[in-house]
Image (tube, rainbow, N blue to C red; front, side):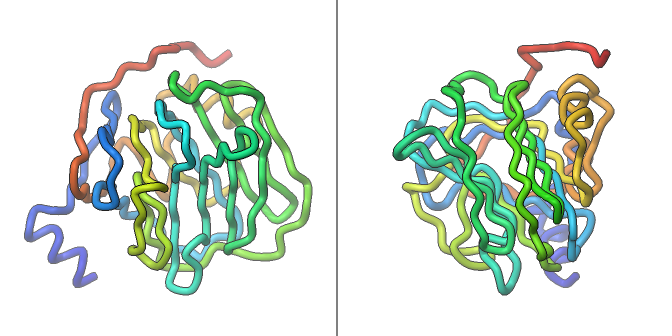
Length: 224
């Protein structure tokens, strides 16, 4: 609570409707990132994250980094194109790998991941990847959530070689597992917002070279 009050007083903490806006990370660094302050503190037994992004970078990079005091990879989305295009998902430091089908992340990419004890679902540009293994764990309380960098420890430990370079928008998070229909509807329904992270009432602090720019959906559609 003290940290929140200090950030509000200093003007470093913003709350903003980010609809039709994006964060731009124009260069590789270990100092540029956005810390997002969640509306709920956990712990969480289910979770979903959705976003849109694009990046010309062909190396690995972090998409979404949620760390807690005991687990730096408590909920992590990571792009890993070493042997093939892969998205790595970590829950409580346990990794699951999704092999992708030649997605072009230089174009705007729609991504959702849904996690519950009975399995995972990854949704990318209309393609669905599933894993049905059992997860007997939870995401811990008191998360620090960062986009633009990978946390190697709680709020720290950034490397240029893992930084995100590109543009990111529509980042939302829920304390429930979204269904396949929810994830498809998310990218067609502008009124669907997360209850952990709400892009339309985003609490955040940006550090380093991060720009807020206008954004318009390049693939507008309506829910059926």
